[in-house]
Length: 316
View 1 (cartoon, rainbow, N blue to C red):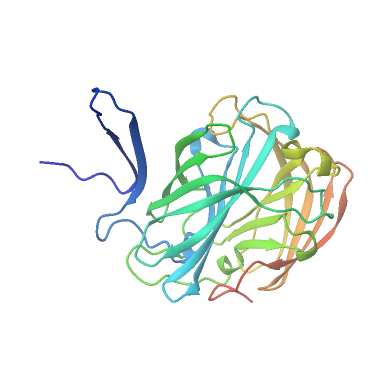
View 2: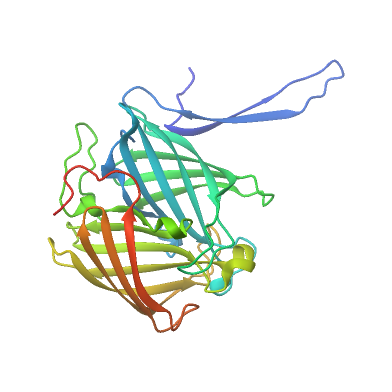
């Protein structure tokens, strides 16, 4: 008797035979979900920070906009923070990608296009464009476990599957009923400045830790002419008091890792300070000052707006 595969990406391989007795193999990867399996992807509760413990120092931030496209069809927007795949190095070896696509109520797995943006400058023009470089199947098995099965089409030949867990505790995700809402967690998600589109932050405000964490995807101050080596990403993090809307935190730069690899171990160092102030559920003011790293000496204030609609239950 045949055994059903596990939920998620499944690769089927076949080999045909011609009259000469030879043939070339072929394979296809599909998303297989048995009835009632997994977790409904179309819920904001899956928003947040995800990583693989054995490759700590890289990971993904996602936000899900429930029913954004139509009733029963939402949108997932993700950002993936990692490194070059050829050699470990300093800040010029940081890499980040984004991925996005529709999610459907009742499904726990979906396929998204991976994009790369290059040619930008830190907190400045020009606006950059997202270029497709591959695809990823994102699958959730419960509110704290997921996988990313990726295939790059950029000539690198990269493919693989990453087992992810949440960085911070679940707040509103549900496996069997309508998601709850939470005033603090409602601030979690994607934030950007339209005039410098192509860079921004993805933030999680988690009252169950309680902890604030964001990943800032941007560029070197003179990154416009550097291609992928001009990409930069930072993280901001701190404990906070639930209900607070002004959040001082430390900025960190992480370097020295390799794409989807446990070795070498990345090095995370503090490179500055920041204060995030929510003036509404759609407005975030970030004051920052870099004392080290590739943006050393940079300081200022950025007025971010939320990407997409406000999640139910946010704020004040």
